[in-house]
Image (cartoon, rainbow, N blue to C red):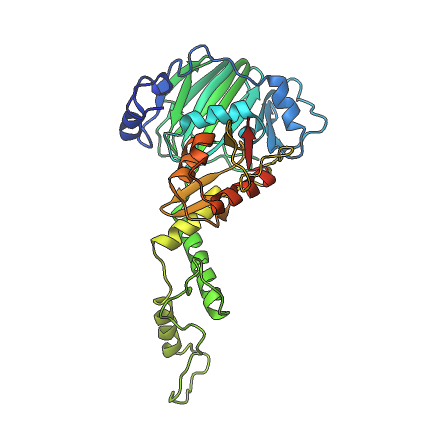
Length: 392
């Protein structure tokens, strides 16, 4: 997708215009975002997926007795009778190539933000109640109809004592009926309520929105890794000493300190020495990139990789036809000369060919010709793990 070209997917905005004017700013209703859309996955497929141990699923229903929720898997799926129900399955992109391909139509937004494709199916009246999400989402209608009501209200108070988060005082400002191919984009904290009109399927393309607390904690954990490496005399994160110029293996000293009449009080000198020590810990761009690259590329627990039979050995002979393709579950990202795959820092320095593999998620045999031996050996390991596949 050219980021300058208008596209029906974004209501005939270009990706650049969408990111500039709409993203995280306001909701957008897009009629026929995918004209004539027909899902490659059926309601029966979603029910079957909810029975599987490796799929995360929930069943939500409501009747005159109120709201109920049950977590899957559902070996014997029994849908509530005389109740409006919704069955949700998370991360369907990890289990279905077509849904993974659909999700990647949104890669005009960085992979670091792209999370998963959740699919919900429902009977007439089914929904999860008025609520808000703390992430960006595209809601693509796949089958049947769903009526959406949305609100920009600031009152986010919730009904107490319920098994799911439902707004106490939802006041709709806009109402839309979506048909297959229609899509609704919602930024974080836009209140919404979707109700099925007849049997219904909705595909939700969700995006990560890390909190500042999560980012700060990750950076501090990365710093803790540095300190441990320095203390135990091990190499740092990038092969050099973990804290250049800093000797954190030395002991705290308080020689010359006067006797105290208040032994329970923390010594001011110890507090100040601790603060001075923290100034020696490196918190820079390289550490931030290492933390983010490993965290955001980390594969979900329910990702399943299946290595191909008898893959080529690239370190011996490069193929003269075909291409390398990343597995649908593989997450490959880069920053400057660092390359991250499925939560690991790759052992080779990133180059233009590996960046091409990350951006395009495939590599033709022509592009492989310029790969060095270290990179080819690494790709062989990825083939053996099932993270990468060869297609002749």
